[in-house]
Amino acid sequence: MSEVVGGIFTSHVPGIGAAIAKGLQDDPYWQPFFDGFIPVHAFLEREKPDVAVVFYNDHGLNFFLDKMPTFAIGAASEYRHEDEGWGIGGFKPFPGHPALSWHIIEQVVGEEFDPVTCQSMLVDHAVAVPFELCWPGTDAWPVRLVPICLNTVQHPLPSPKRCLALGRAVGRALESWQGGERIVVLGTGGLSHQLDGARAGHINVEYDRFCLRNLASDPEAMLQHDTLDIVELAGSQGVEILNWLAARGALRGSVRELASNYHVPISNTAAATVLLENRARVRA
Amino acid sequence: MLPFSRAEASGKRAIPGTPVFDGDAAMAGYALNAMCYSFNSADNRAAFAAGEEAYMDRFALTDQQREAVRQRDVLGMIAAGGNVYYLAKLAGILGLNVQDLGALQTGVAVDDFKAALLAHGVTERTVS
Image (cartoon, rainbow over all chains, first blue to last red; front, side):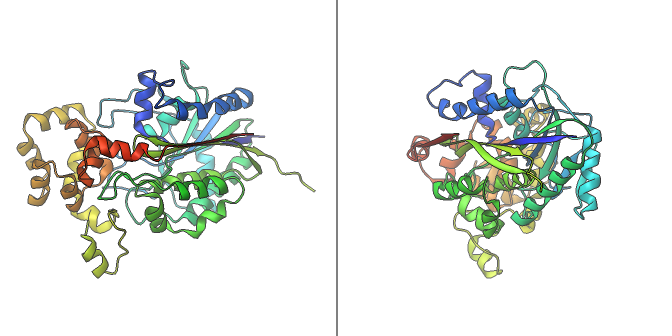
């Protein structure tokens, strides 16, 4: 039987990828963020997952406004990160797991979700940066990828409640998968930040602390705000917390926080990394 | 993107200083955003740099969008329906990073914009 070993939640600022490329991990500006991955690396070394299911948002690499899915699930044998407009890209290809992808698709559609299914899909920095952070310096990624893309770009966005419910449906699908894989779940983006408008640079430490405090123990507390509430609180791009909420939903066992790191600022962003352990519930 | 007064008049929730990229904005901004999406290709970035007007013709930008691009007016691009995820690709051609964009939109010097971010100065870490 497969096992969902835990969740890794992290910001995915493109500048982090540039800092990795330049080897700035120990630079005073970057170190407080990169140090948050020390416990993540120890966890991954210990748990050795085979598969990463990643909840993220696309920033205009694979999806444009001509066709903008609310939820999209990758079912490709390989995914690539290509040029997003800055000449950066060409990270190692990401091996897929089409059989598990289709199992997830079957299960969540069976639960009345309606995702777009993608046999060909580019993944952007929202997948590539977290992979580089989790598995630095590897010749080939040690995990196979199932990407699940949420629309956090064009309103109306899916509600926080719907994102959490999607994550829970994915979690049930992972638990019913008959393979022996060890699975880690990733949620990427956030925390508070805003790139656009007269309020550009907005950061809300209080709201971020609220999310960090509740993510492991009471994610439903985060449902008290609707998407526009979150835009107001966390900024127009801080709404990427929806990816975290979906990923949290996929952890359905006994969940415990192993590590949390919050550092402001990285670029225009309040950056955070959280590691959650997921253990099977004790059955009566 | 509706100006906020119009957003309120239309019954939409207005969040001060914060564009909400909804269906109206996505329709109004389609040509501008489509042009920016094309900049995922290095060849297209070079073509824009070689002739901005001709490139804007290719994507049939509105007069408002063209003028905002000519003036490097980021708030103007957003008011014309631009979405920052796509505009960021244009900003890259213009040599602007997200701090530069923030400074342009808030009317402060880049160093002041960066200083305001650094002023938060928060680092909180727990490891169990």
